[in-house]
Image 1: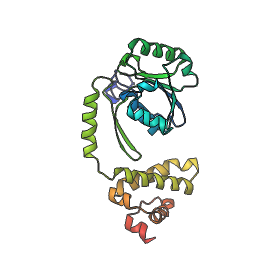
Image 2 (image 1 turned 90 degrees about the vertical axis):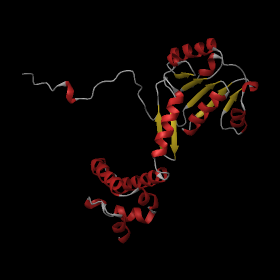
Image 3 (image 1 turned 30 degrees about the vertical axis):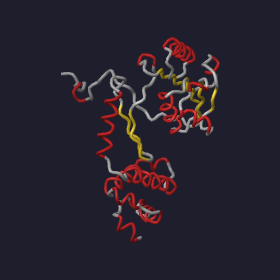
Image 4 (image 1 turned 135 degrees about the vertical axis):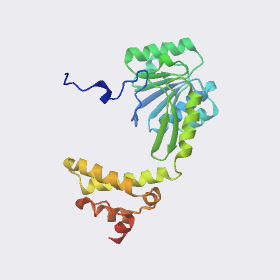
Length: 240
């Protein structure tokens, strides 16, 4: 008999998906080609991720929202059509123009330079897709149909959002602050597994309402139990 484990013990591979990641692009340079409605949505997405954005598009082609971001200096603006040297220094490119030939040229240039690119409405010319995103403070939930049905992604995202408590974002913010304080209390890397287990216990034991109402004083009270490994109730934490 074979000593190898049977395949059924392991998850089945389901090809055809995307690798969904939280891509950190803070201070990265993102070039957006075009200034219409689609470009406006792309620009907001990357500004929310704290990227540095340059829009290349004739001023006459900017819609109201993109023109506003230019006037507010939220983005840099190059007032002309795309030229290949615009890619110099770009970490990511998004193209949203009504010119398939010009769009494909942008794609080819990005491939030559190994720059991640998204050509709107042309799935084969995309290194990444935009999903439909629910945002509540630090919480982001993305639904992707892998380019098959963007409207359906929006419908699924709304259904998911409806099931989430309205104060979820505030609870996550407080958990983040507690984690940061815990790292200050127990900074050693070897404490990692204990920190993770203890924080998991707090998240599981405390209700969302308790996490939302947690004050700085409560956090200090909670942290006083960490050394023992005990996860206190909110009442025990406040008694400290």
